Image (cartoon, rainbow, N blue to C red; front, side, top):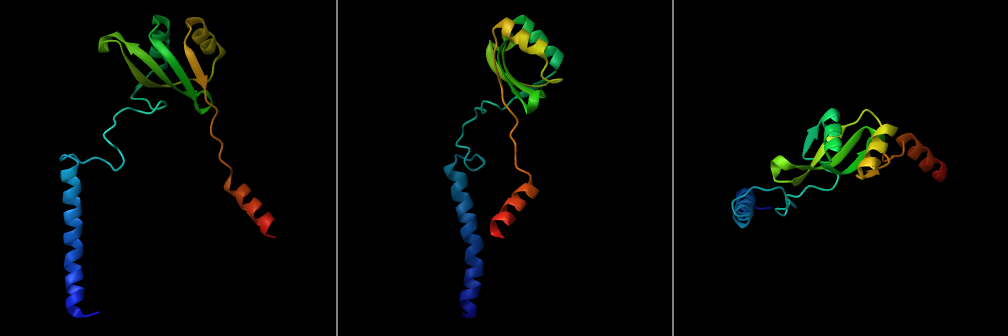
Length: 139
């Protein structure tokens, strides 16, 4: 490659990158947003916005503020939907660390008429088991 073309390519690359970033910044209205965000600010169903203690969670259940409970991690974590009158009765998602799946908690949720789901933990195969399976098929 000619020396002049190398110098030209080395100068054009950073200029092209700067122009591309400027175009992205201007097309997004001046906001720096992560790629693929699309401006949507709603959280997924199992994502909690804040944390709550277990005792306060039980108080919310007794007061009738909890509308739904999703239990994860073998009963160690729950994501609840609760109505807060201080926030104009908006539904908020809160994460609660549970002491374990207690039958009295399940009975209390049933008695209050609160819908709940228990999600089993995701099981991932052990790497050694995968390696053994691959090796047994090869040999």
